[in-house]
Image (cartoon, rainbow, N blue to C red):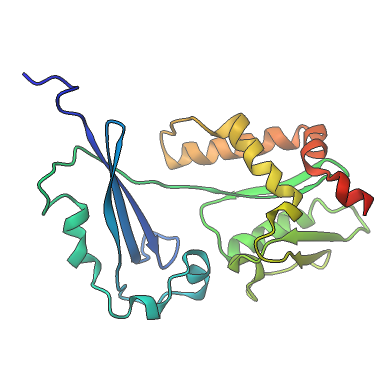
Length: 232
C-alpha cells in the first residue's frame, strides 16, 4: 500500500474573471496552478469569449475588453484542460475561491469609521457605502472623501449624497490615502491565517473585524493620521 508521502495530494487551484459578480455572469478568463507538496506547477490561463458583452464596470476591474476576447475560444472548448479531463496527471482536490469586500472609510481626526461588507465591487455597492458614510457625517458638516480611481468609485451611476464630495487621487498613489493602512491592520490582526467554512463565515469575520476597529477610535487615529500631511 502506498503511503501518503508516496502519493502527494494534487490540488488544482482555479481562478476566474467574469462579466460581473452574480452566478449568472459569464467567464472571460480562466487560469490554474497545481500544488503538489511544496511544488507549484503552472497549468496556464486562457481568455475565453463569453456569450454576452463585457460591461465597462467589469473591464475596469480585470482590464479585459470585448476586443480582447473577440477571437478567443468558448469556455467549453478549454474547460477540459483545467478539469483534468485531458491530462495525464490526476487531480485530487479542486480549489476555487469566494470573497467579500469591505467598503470602509475613516476619519482619522475623530477616530470614526463607516463601512459595509459587500459581495461585489460596483457602483451599486459604492452608492450604498456613500449612504452609510453620510449617516456618520456630523450635522452641518461636509465630508471630503479621498479615494482611488477604481471604476466603481468614479462611475456616473454612483449616487452621491449632498454631504459628501469625492476627491479622486492620482493613479498609483495609495500612500496618499490613510485608509490604505486599515486593510493590512485588519488582515494582520483579525482576518489572515484562517480557514473559512462558508461564504457566510467570510462575511461574519469581515463584519466582526470592522466592528472591532470602529470600537477602537484610538487605533483609527494612530494608523490613519499622517504627520507629514498635518504639517504641510
